Image 1 (tube, rainbow, N blue to C red):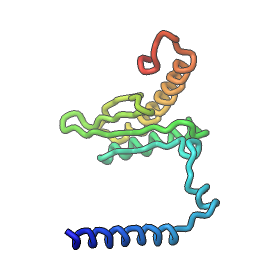
Image 2: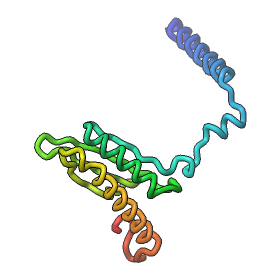
Image 3: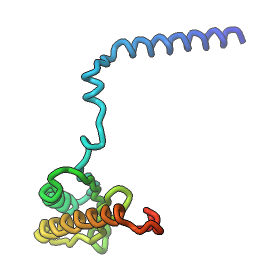
Image 4: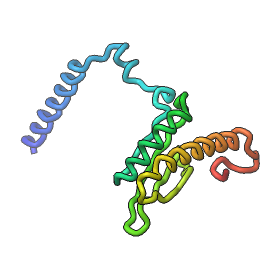
Length: 147
């Protein structure tokens, strides 16, 4: 019993010593702390892609290019998720926050994908603007999650 207590005390002392050593070895200047801290404005305007296939990647690239032209200020972040299916091709989901803004099937013909992605970017951007307007001028009797 005494031996296990002694081993526990030695292990605790080693843990405390390693934490103190780690704290001393990490540089924490004010400039570095400000550089590491990200505000919400710094991270806006992202297009996150979770694609699997070549068609999904082509859609993501074309969508991101069209999205950067629409959202030049970088106010909105969207996510593109691809779910490949064996019979229908790939399903694409575009989400803003926790709201699915668009769902579509990608054609197997890759030459049509850039035009479809540009159209999707325009529709999603307009959908986000409409959603924000309804949030701002919404009916007070309807909850935010019911819009």
